[in-house]
Image 1: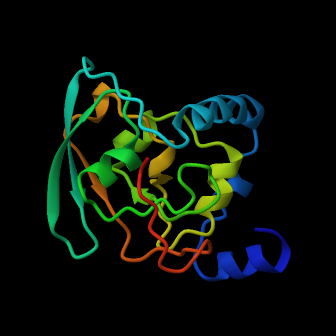
Image 2: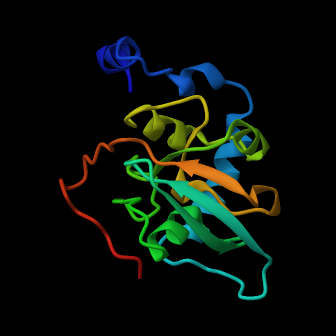
Length: 167
């Protein structure tokens, strides 16, 4: 967001995190671009990878325990387990409908988000200091036992009500 849009977002309580980061974005952008290309469209899971356990806390407060594989995409894992995590842009970093809220220690261990992810997060409903886009998170061993909170709502600028199906 820029100009009046950024001012409005900040006035509404958004942190403007992309403006706060600054240094080291070129390297993170390159890494994120490689990750984005790898993740777009399909969930490439190694069936022999270590299994980890995650708990999704749904919008209504109910919990869903799921198993995932190290290296699996968080958005695709949620979709395969009927967790209401939309992903309208199908992992192309063009929306914020897969916004999730992570535990602080997990957030701190992940690679920093690229500027494009930061820009999409600036539009997310209920942004927190540990917010990320699920489509940009690859499961890792340190995430075993993690609790992932879904925000109470999402903002879908793509097509209202469109819910893509993983292919």
